[in-house]
Image 1 (cartoon, rainbow, N blue to C red):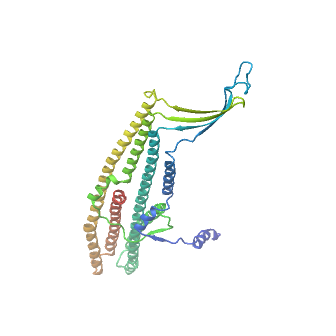
Image 2 (image 1 turned 90 degrees about the horizontal axis):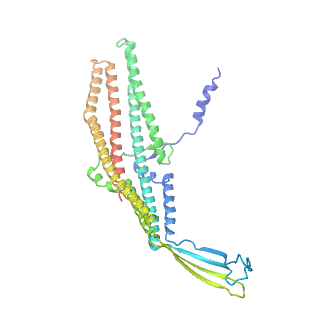
Length: 411
């Protein structure tokens, strides 16, 4: 058998350059989440594009150059002779359309509303990036803590393996005792495998928002407590509600634009006519005005449509506020539930499990308990501590979600 087949992949892994872990704190994560994000860069470019459009919104349309042959006879003895009649000329001119002032102001209003909408979309995108990055950091931080706890427990259980073997060798314990220790080790190892997968998933989610290779959560986690009254007072400053308000402003501007169509527009043109030398050239000035005489079939339906869109935008904004209020109460209830479960396990279940483990160790040292009892107590304590860390992570994440969603973007 050619063992090189099996050693080659392992050698490649050993020779590959190790990715150096890069520590990152919670506040730094929130700061980096608002920088160098492709989605945010796209929103910023959109704002610049709409701002440039707004600068030209109030400008008059481009003038129109006109040219043509006028009054050319097509019948009679002078047919198709451009010099046969006095009225025949080659005319060159310039025309300028002048939309009514209300329409020009409405066009500016639409452009400015588009800029405001783009800014609201950018704020919302930043809000979602910070929220996603903060939650990913918390998941990574607690996965690291749980992984360290699992490793510590595995080390403590492995120290009991030689004790079990000595007891079996001396005849004071049955051979099945060593198998029970192995079963406990496998249980913790299974938990460690799941936690390791959760850590890798959290790292991947964090890298979505922070350009850091192999990120490692560093520093203290955000607090698990919140100020519910203060959070509730900030709902109308939520980026999602502000985005809905910007949509209302855009709809209002569109309604003003539709109303402006009922006012007449103007145009003016000047022309210079080139004729045969014996007749002399001519100069012309012309003006025109639109006549919105049939507004009932033209402008009025468009006005009503714009008003309906505006009413829809207002209703959606009000509905979004109700949705935010309901979501806030649901998030608050989830935080309360997670906090109570964490505190109950921390204050009631953990002392009992520790006391049991201590008593079993003391009894085993005094010869009144078996090694299996100690192993079971230590395993139960380790599983409980892992569960408590998971409950704490859920509490901290729920609190951070509330703060990031309803507080940190308040203007």
